[in-house]
Length: 77
Image 1: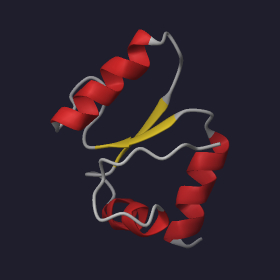
Image 2 (image 1 turned 180 degrees about the vertical axis):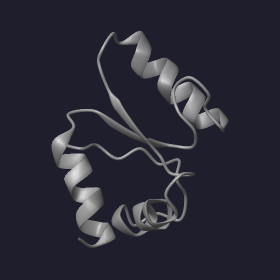
Image 3 (image 1 turned 45 degrees about the vertical axis):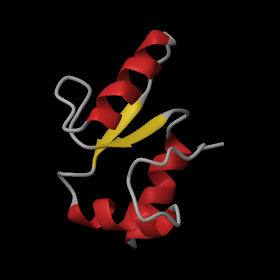
Image 4 (image 1 turned 90 degrees about the horizontal axis):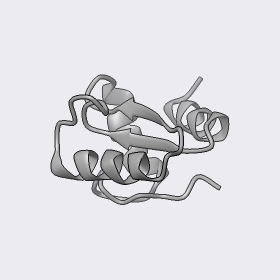
């Protein structure tokens, strides 16, 4: 499966998905921390992908979203 296909599957399989640096318990950047707090305040369940743990996803998400940064949220639906 290509990286692009993996990313698409992750997005398709989760109603709310956050690609972030770190995890909700230990976010590794300010945006990730604030995004988790915002989603948590909505009392909704969400899944996360730690881009620091998967170099392919980390680079691939920039291509998939046509962005040069990781901090541009993209709607999944």
